[in-house]
Length: 139
Image (cartoon, rainbow, N blue to C red; front, side, top):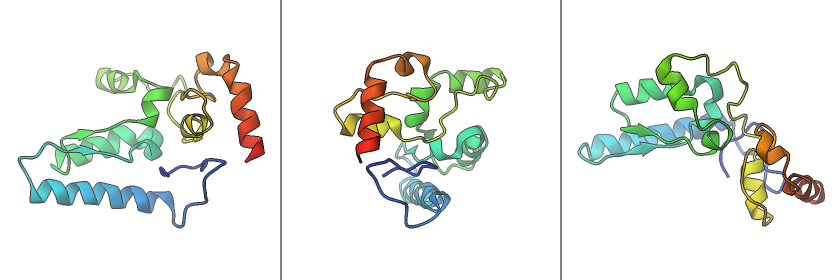
């Protein structure tokens, strides 16, 4: 289960503060990169940092802890975020940044297409959104 402010309705409450899990993943990637400096490494667990992703990402890349920062769940809610950050745009203005609601992972486990149902108007308008809400109520 990915670190989330809102764990999946069919998941479990995390045994620790999710930031601890994120830091553990960042440190594990750092250790791999230090042990194998020629290996291209992609870091994970950044979506949880939400509007602080650009700050955390630039620090770990700058310090050589990883070569790339993977953005999984976040890309479902705001696929333009990397370009916005690089252009210097206010990426927080449109309120599309991932808030780790976990619908993108709960939906596929219930046979429903993955997407950011709470933040993306496209997914919010799909009939599958009602299916997802029912699945969450049933779990």
